[in-house]
Length: 260
Image (spheres, rainbow, N blue to C red):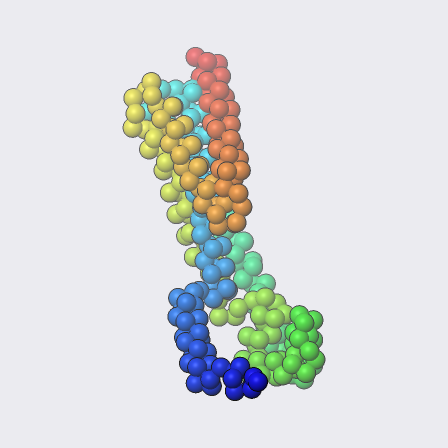
């Protein structure tokens, strides 16, 4: 006849197994980034890739268009460098203004939340409990979670739950501006160098090949970061870039013929 002692595992074995499992789990997740920090890094990286992509396409269209109008290396380089600087500054300025506006809005929301926490702490705690209750927690557990989070850091708890803002990790407008400037300039250097170095006969084709390679890389990376299909993103990226170069090249040829 089976007894409880016969079928149940030894207490020491269970304890050792649980401890080992907890240790294994802790070891596996020790180097794993938290979701918020990981999402922030992915957003920065994605913005950098898109900035480089813009630099590649816009500068490639510019230098290929000028190459269609003239064979003078100096004119092509001048146009390319001007396009690089103007585009990078435009990207940086636009990103600075955009992120500054976002930061101002977030700071205003945080100031309002601070005032509400001072003036009506009980109502704010109930509101926080309702948020967690709406996510599936029982009323009792939601109230306990809201109470403990409020006691630890009321502003952080309410900012994350109500506003989806981390008060300690607001985006810097200057960092965003520099990231956009450098990524655009880095991408723009690909067509600029590719069209400046080869001889006249191979200039345009060398630039096209270099641009296609660059667009394949940026398309692949952006697709991987966004969890999309790489083939579709790469194809879309390359088609848009090649189309831009073809159009601007023939515009340059037409302009050069008309002037001549």
